[in-house]
Each structure stands twice: as C-alpha cells, then as structure tokens.
Image 1 (cartoon, rainbow, N blue to C red):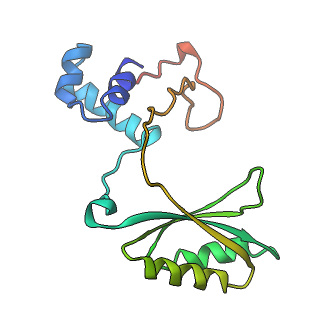
Image 2 (cartoon, rainbow, N blue to C red):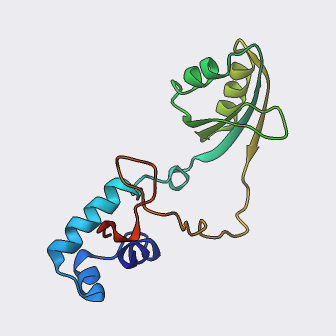
Length: 162
C-alpha cells in the first residue's frame, strides 16, 4: 500500500530505484510488485495535446430518439474529428456527449449540421471550455484490493502484497 501511495502521489514518475530506496525493498521485488499494480489497478498513458497544435475542444450534447443512441455513437466514432463518445444519464435528456477537436468554425458548423441530419438525432448543442478556473486531483480511492478470481476483498492474512 505504501508503494501504491508513492506511485499515485508522483503520478507514476517515481523511478523503481527510488521506490526501492524509500521502501527499503530490493529493486527486483519493486519491479515485480510495480508491474502487478500497473496491470491490475493503474492506468498510465502518454497522449498528444491537440490544443498545442491549434485545435479547439468542442463537446457536442446530442438528444436522440427512437432507440438509435448506440448506432449514432458508432457512426460518430468513424469521424476524424471525434475523439470520444459517451452515453450519458442525468437530469436532462441528453443521451450522448461527444468530444471533438476542430481548428476552424466552418468545420464545427458543418459537423453540427451533419449530426443534426442523422437519423434519430433530435437536437445538438455544442459547448466549448473558454477558461479553466482551477482543478483538483481526483479523489483518493480507498478501495480494498480484490483477488483476480473473485470480487471479494482479500483478507489481511492473505499474504498478498503490493
């Protein structure tokens, strides 16, 4: 658990050697445990930031009808501008949230018109974040570790170690 905390606090940038020193555990043990944590519990990735290349992030909020939500989502994912499609639930009747990156307003206007013309689309609203006021880290998850064979937490005496 201490290793997991160090990995999360450093956002994965702490070296295996440094973990070994801080935890007073052999490097080979740290490598094995780190690999297991990364495979089972952690998400790590690198990605380009489209904003650094002059793109703007636009979110489309799509109202659908006639049970076509999944078909519309799959069709939208074929488009180059679309990076993510999310099915939503909540107070309003927005069924899809679509993240797109565009450079020009004309591309956005064409995209919105094409989406509105899709069978099963009732309406499309678009929003753009114009300023980030601040942010917080995601909440710390205090979830128990689970075994791979069940969804039950492992008992303290299981011998499982991070």
